[in-house]
Amino acid sequence: MKKSDFTGLKCPLPVLKAKRVIKKMKQGESHQFLSDDPGSPIDFSHLCEVENLELNFVKTHGIYLFNIRKL
Image (cartoon, rainbow, N blue to C red; front, side, top):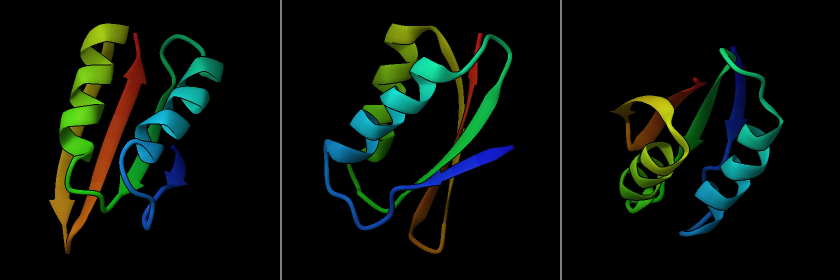
């Protein structure tokens, strides 16, 4: 799985940069995004709902790991 590290970036940069990556993904592909911004769960959840993407995420040691799959 490919990974993009957006730690250190503040809202809305992590989700905006993720949108660029997602746009290039093919149907069925997955990508992992890392962020430490506290607003990221809301931003990524909203993005995935609007764009019809599958989202799973966990928080580990202050870092959010977002696994997104393009449906």
